[in-house]
Image (cartoon, rainbow, N blue to C red; front, top):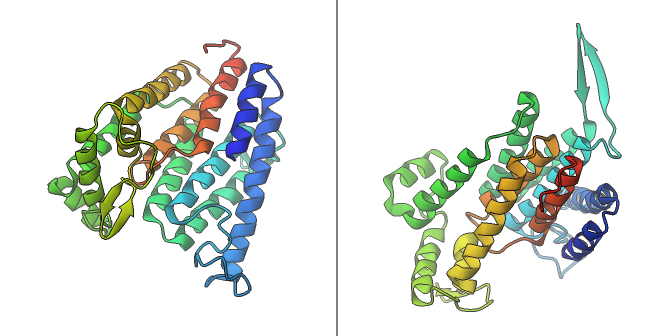
Length: 306
């Protein structure tokens, strides 16, 4: 997947058939997802003939491990909706119910269900919340037949960051919310990692500690901050974090000005990548595919803005 991001950026420069590139990427992801899902069902305790693969819920690491699986599923679902919006290589069913025609897209339904079931099998609450949010937002957007106002969602994201990450389990609202979900207020130890990450950022705020993903020493080992923004700031400093935030605000501003279904899909997908980043560190390479497709959305609107 990271290898596909660079050719896409190159092809964008010569205005090639981007839809075909998206379709090829989707086919690769769909194939890996189906194989992984099938093997997980057949061998729930892992593959008995493959001693190198010990992850019980994801025998061959096709999609990553634990919460990391959701990022590839986000790409799968997002690209599926992108292709549907462009009517590219996708089959639709038209049903007459009473006096109304209902258009269904079987491939959308199938991979949405598989994505949700995959996260249930893995047992990832974060992954299930993120993939469910993506599907719900996309479907609500399609039903409303209009664009979301991006700024309430962006404000909600930063509110989550402040109340959950910065204030942590000292915030009674967080404790009440997590108790409703049957989770501990420390998010399985993440609150301690967030506190340690904030201390590291205070020590080297400008340039950070360098590109080491496991920077926090705790519990007899080294761990990542388990939050995307804290991870970027701890490793690359507040300067890198500022550039990362500016990139996304710029992309959101562009997508917010394009009144098309494609622009809405791209915004929601990128937003859900960021939502998953509240509980996991690192920037996923597949996230940049959707950022790069912003230029494609501009061409689709026939009003290039970048």
